[in-house]
Length: 393
Length: 160
Ligand SMILES: Cc1ncc(COP(=O)(O)O)c(C=O)c1O
Image 1 (cartoon, chains in turn cyan, orange):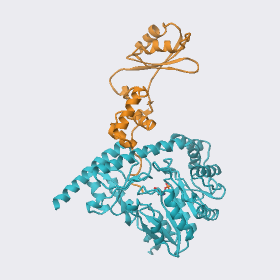
Image 2 (cartoon, chains in turn brown, orange; image 1 turned 180 degrees about the vertical axis):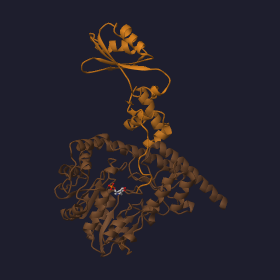
Image 3 (cartoon, rainbow over the protein chains, first blue to last red; image 1 turned 30 degrees about the vertical axis):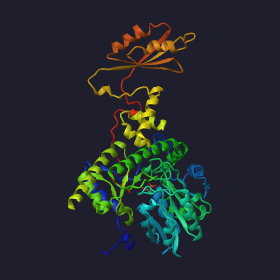
Image 4 (spheres, rainbow over the protein chains, first blue to last red; image 1 turned 60 degrees about the horizontal axis):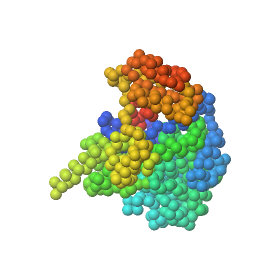
């Protein structure tokens, strides 16, 4: 029989996370710190709105770009949180998670051979989606000494005359890094100067601690060259509802809507009704969850300090990204050994790009009680490793 | 810090000062002082344990009693409320708006004890106009806690 598979798809490596997942599921009593989604249930009033939508028989397709009231709520949310105005009629598209927005956004922008700058470590889907859309990926290895921010110098070095898009993944999964206004202003200057477009993945925008998230689209001259991506998964603990959105210049949203209309038709209707409720009445829930994440974040940072484990202080998302270079193992070796010996699962930094080597992603989407036990085990583990190393001398 | 501190210890009063300080991003001494102040101001009024007595062998019956009273000149409802809350078997007394005035929670060993309390102690108090007693058959949720909830994590173990 012929090989019926696409060469292009076969080129893509399966996600490093998947491999790790297969080992963890086998272990029954492992504590996982490997989850990239909130531990909270979707707030009840939001779920209830979903139930009402079912009861009212809202079980049909919506318009391709999403329910009008939802687009209006998204518009007003971005206005009040970032002071950017998007027209709900033609500058907002409701998608199946931020995931779909990333995919079709890149497809709407890229021609074969266009260069896409992807700072890493970062979320796993940018590079494959860009590759599938014909992009040529140019990776920037972000540095811990810069707190995993994108620096103007790094960006300048990566730009060529083929560069078309910069993916801006902040607040960052897996590092927890954020970009503040002054950081973004420097980046924006280069972007405008070199006439580049930005895809800004702001899915963790509500989860920043002690500092407020700033969107690059809010910087003078950037709205017209930014596709802002966000969604309901992280802020409202709605991962399974599969709902996100993209906001951007009308020309791009129009092209994205075309792909969306043919590939997806529309985002889940029930989820859209629930999301209207989330945007209208969900602020208290978000504040409560943010406060709780922040408490756990402080707890982990303190514990790492006590263990003498190097870790820069992250101000966003729900991950910490400690450095494990002192142990002379690869991230994958370290994570596997930690899992087998102490039954704690954390994701090797390399799952998010080569520059994640020497780091571990630890999620704090877990209760303090769980984190406490996990940190005890981690401490045991590194104490053992250090003792072994000393003996070896 | 006050509100955040209270919201943590409202759910877990056994948490150590050290851990509390870490979670709040404050020094232990600041947190200890704040708690002392909250206790002094009677904002923190006690540290209790939520027990599902039904799962023990101890017999307990709880009743909610609606009470209508004639408020007294110069003292409103305070005096009669005090008369009622002084009984140790009375667990709570609230002044309520609507069809009646006081809502009393009463905990006793048996139904008979409750009946006795209502007919001999409560109804006979001066200024009590009427009472209506409701027995609690099952507690589903108390103090914001679902009593029978299993805390299982239904997420996949590793996700990007
Ligand atoms: C940085 C980042 N972007 C996008 C997504 C996709 O989220 P969703 O498709 O659920 O909106 C995730 C999910 O983990 C993420 O971490």
